[in-house]
Image (cartoon, rainbow, N blue to C red; front, side):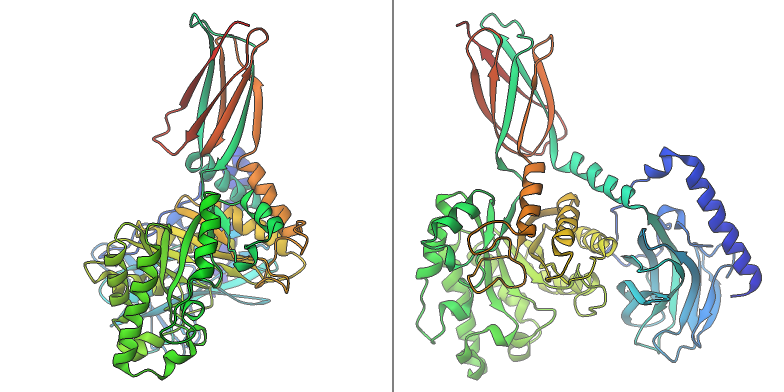
Length: 577
């Protein structure tokens, strides 16, 4: 970058800093933009947040603030509707355009840009080169002749300069870039986004009135409201160890409203020997969950990873495999339809492709069509890892996930699809801006989204990171439910336990109880002069008890669900003693 451009960048950032310092509360009130586009458009949208800290975000000032990266040639172009920058003559994946920025390690950065390529379609990634390494902010499958939105996010390990650039393994294409945005948020601002979303999407105002037998308001009565069941589906995986284990059953059933059987519904568990099916264990587990009102996700009908299939499957001929798969789908789904709340039809079909390699590229599409026919009333999920937890995994990016969804949806019978995000996080700090932006992108489909297998690799900050991830998922307005992957086993859990072998909470279990208390619990107060007590409560089932200073106590129950924002009102009658 030339000296004049560097000076302009410094001035720009100083002005931005001054604006933030002097705007006081307005700066901390900057809302998060959850919008994203999954369509390839004729014209790009305006940059989010006005471009944030990006210089010349709409390329209206020529190439000011931008420079060539690697050996690429850079060119400014003007169309009938917008200005943009083109990186051409590319010989290596990182040959593109770049802007140098100053990033801070205590900030969370949300990123977006609109990308086009000169021909065909190919993945384009946004990367920040920092002193401590390369940070991948996100990627998109870009196409020729239309603009695609790349939305992502990044945090850095240490403050300092960072070079933003774009890369693609396909060096034969030119990369076009427009409407770039990088918006920093403080930790406090990020939390305020969560709080704002929770108050809007997960809570509702409640007005309780106490009146006497003549309909007159009763003031100064004590009102106690207790949540009996959380409305937001929140749960944990479970396995056959819960059968006959009273301590495990009590700990589990007192906390969770949804679950997934860790292995017991999988094909390898049901039919380890060809032609001999044994459903006794999942039947018994379903009996337990039903008795406690716990919903069960059907996991999974088929798994594309061959190491988790019955051993006899691999040696089948194409025709025998097709028949075996069809029998498997019909067998489990007919048995449990109406008893589960949704199905993971094909597990991890972005990373693995056993069935598609044997039965053709349209295999997943056909499996979902059969599943939808058998159980048309429930949602048929994809279920994949690394879509929200790892920005470097090119196989499972939101853009790749969407491509697979479109392929499955191309069958007209596949109309009731859902997005399952496993969410197996590593031991390092989670990239929350990337997680949020990935969900934003997938949410643009309008399909239901669940975090299906949440856990964090063992490490010193495991509980801290679990809390961050659960809060991020729960607060996102388009996440419909969360299941953790922490089924208990005396030999140890998959990656993350919530209790010890005596069902005493570990630090991770304490996080769960802390959040459950925060999302429910009990509130108490007094009625005002008009007999009203008002409070904002999380969606769920509640019991309310009223104790007047004179007269008999009374009680009632109510269910609080999402509506258009109108307060829920409950009236309690106070009878004379």
